[in-house]
Image (cartoon, rainbow, N blue to C red; front, side, top):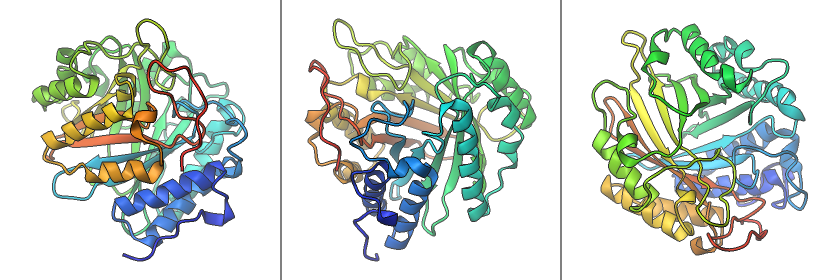
Length: 389
């Protein structure tokens, strides 16, 4: 493995949004086994896609609230674990963050994705076909566009985009999802979705995927473990028992219900926690049956623990159940922050279990940058903590 740079690309100081998150990414690339050249390229890609926000000093407040993280850092990391392989590193970012309003954010995000995709030779035709649905003149909702990069050896990532079904209003979100699925050839897919409280995201794989997916994310409030196990609509009871068991561990044995609050908002102090909804994702890869070929359950573990020490213990238990090595996760947390897990709640944001037909189950841990703030352990008064580093 080649030597890794420990500084930040393009001369950005580590007291800037881009400088800090790029340094975190460089360290995480080491955990994921990516070489120094790839790591440097991906860190530079991150700061390029963040645009002007990358150079914003961290002693200034976030330029705009972002639904992507608790403290409004426009970057989140994740590690996906499968048997017999090193974990796959992903970075989720909001490329239009700070452009000024949802409409400008969406246009800036589209430009950033198209420019990056052009450099990588990744076609954006499927995204282009949906532009009028998800980027109206006066959009609504908590986001315009997010982009996820799955970081692979060779310096060319796999690209995913996340769009807002409520861009034309929450009442039209279901119709927007139905029409988007229809345009992409999935005419029967909408009717296969389970009941939910709302449509959260519409996502697309762009470019070189073995089976490009169209994904619909749903929010489920007051969810029980049994209900979580019954959410899959793949038609073959794919992983129902495993999903239910996963929910019980991730949410805590005494947690009978999922969250009843929007993702991205903090937990409330006082009697009874306010929790984010559990999310389900339904991935469509073929059009013949109308059924999804993949199902993922996301549990907002940070809302079900007192601190990240408990979240880490649950993540380790879930990885152990799948026969997966948890050591990379512990190294990843140390790569992102020097704080103890017990000193905050939110470093591990979500735990997810994915089932895709024909593939082994995948466990994903979502890791917060905490560039601006560390959410205190449950029961402590909110306080700004030192920047991660």
